[in-house]
Length: 247
Image (cartoon, rainbow, N blue to C red):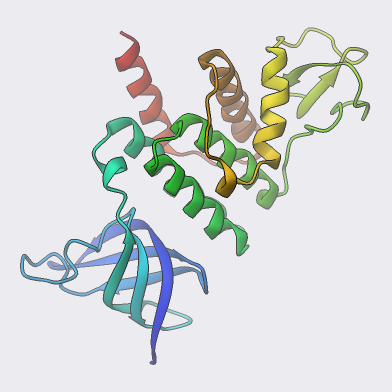
């Protein structure tokens, strides 16, 4: 096996034997790979502090294409210290790692790495974690092949007089096709389309009213449940945190 230097983000960590871990790493070069971090749980191991999820860096590994690679060391690019110190931020970050892990197992698209990286960097910079999570969620639906209709009515295809957004219908609903679906704020209709098309890397400001964020988040939760079959316990934890903070 040759030594390779690979840019990656650690998505999951699993204890292995008495002193090691297996890391699932989303890499820029090879997609999702498994990496054995030998002895990293020992107190004196140089790998101890970096063999954890939410580490973004250049991994030096004995790379094995069809099997577990072996970690030699990591040059950390970003350990996301601000996220790690904030319960809400780390909850959203954990959810995004879980979601990306589920999606990347179904499609080895290169663009997913950049989407996750830029989203985490923006959360670290202090931008709205719920809005950023929703942006990544709607973009990942594209890779799953189940994107909602946000350019025109999901029923008739018209782009005129869009009146609401429905997870059951699969996206926009126009005035002529509207029956009894719950109405959403007009800004929610516009904002979710912006979420889909915006380049995360270019976002410098992200101020969204709570009402709009909650409507978009509710739509995406229902849409994921209906069209993807993916379920993340980490999203449930976010909901619990929200309940704690509103009491």
